[in-house]
Image (cartoon, rainbow, N blue to C red; front, side, top):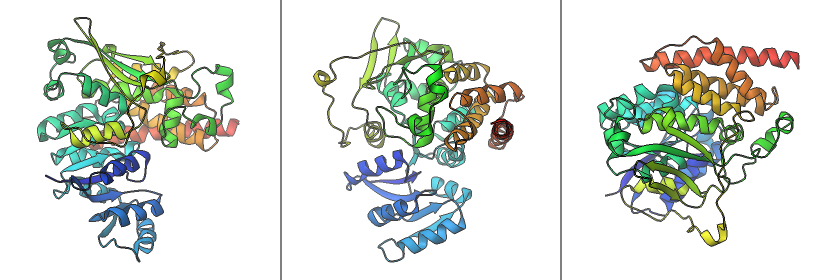
Length: 406
């Protein structure tokens, strides 16, 4: 039976990779809606190729520009705009599958709308779980949505766990109970180490945005590439993993693995360690989630272990990369702390990319905001968004102070 797909964040790297896989299987998938933000020409080209029912952009001006771009093409659907339109297409019953690939806090509301509608949700927006993990997972359980992880690390863990583990984890209960019942001791998240893996603090202090986004293994957007360089991306992933797999942060270990061939591992009580391996290409986890429990061609070549020749591992250096330590702290604190961490980091990364602060000041700014924000227990989407807003204001004020000093 053909699946009808909505792609939230269609012009980003995950969205583009998703549509590449979809194009290989026209008999299995049709595209119901595509959303984009600033890359209007790319969105128009996607519309001409996949002929969705809806296109969604951020504002009225973008919608008008997009309408001009598609005017002479084959697209005959409707163009919508705004945050509510994102939630509307995410929950539209005409689509049974939603790729949630909007980067950052902006992806929370539409991703939650897709979950509440009981869809198959392919989760590439880690911030949804970082900001609102308990609320989000409670909605998954209540709606009977099928949540499938797209981040290569979480998808690797998903593939390495017992087939019924995740559905059991969604039912709630004490953290770690499902893991203990299934003989799972620990989850091991692999990290490439990013472009500055061997750089000193002094070298990183002078790092430019261009150097920070030059990831050695993966092709990603600017924000996630900077997060990889600070190791904050791995910190956000460990918070996400704690919610996805119902374990405590103390049951998750980050392992630096420069080759990015082993995407993550699961350590079992009996001494077994299961891992998922593959070439570093996001089309593999995307194809896995699109077709699960089947397997389809992703367009990714097979891993040649003889060509790889060696696999290296190391513990992360938390002194050189304090962002990861901040994420562990926020995960242990719980409540609003992960949402504050994420909001402050988004502001700090944007400030770095704009040239307003230095690379090392990203983690310093996040640490300062974590210290000043009052802990809360947000139990509604509005409460989560309020925490996010307050943390952003704090972070923006700190950026202004640092900019004036500079």
